[in-house]
Image (tube, rainbow, N blue to C red; front, side):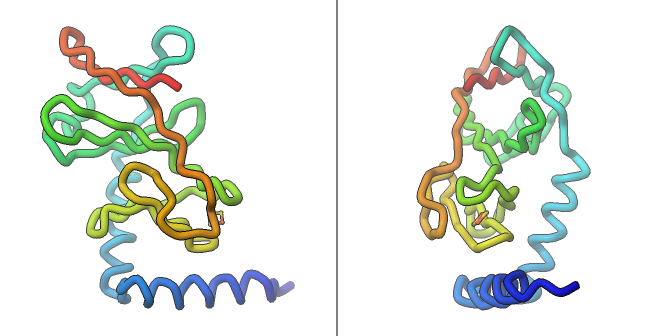
Length: 153
Ligand code: FES
């Protein structure tokens, strides 16, 4: 059984990749990065109601500026980033268009949806549709005493 709509969408998406300057080697690098990130995927530890605690000891990528870790929060894919100093942010990977899981593209520092091509900037703000709403962001607190990052909705 074929899916003519899917073929059109796939063709359209590949066309868009070309417009963004993503070539086949770039896509391969992206796939490799996401595979590596997937291998390091972590599960956040439940904290108090409505919060998830992520240990920096268990996630060394968050011990340096520019590091990031994919985690699951109540089965929702999320990426936690460490910016400069003790500044952290966490962004949901659930596309606001139709719910596909967006990929983080390190080179362009964007989230790209593989389904219909929406692009979000590093903060999760929409920079290209069809999505109209930004990716959900979590409130993030660094608990220095416990060396953990605390995510809250
Ligand atoms: S689900 Fe349609 S652009 Fe992401």
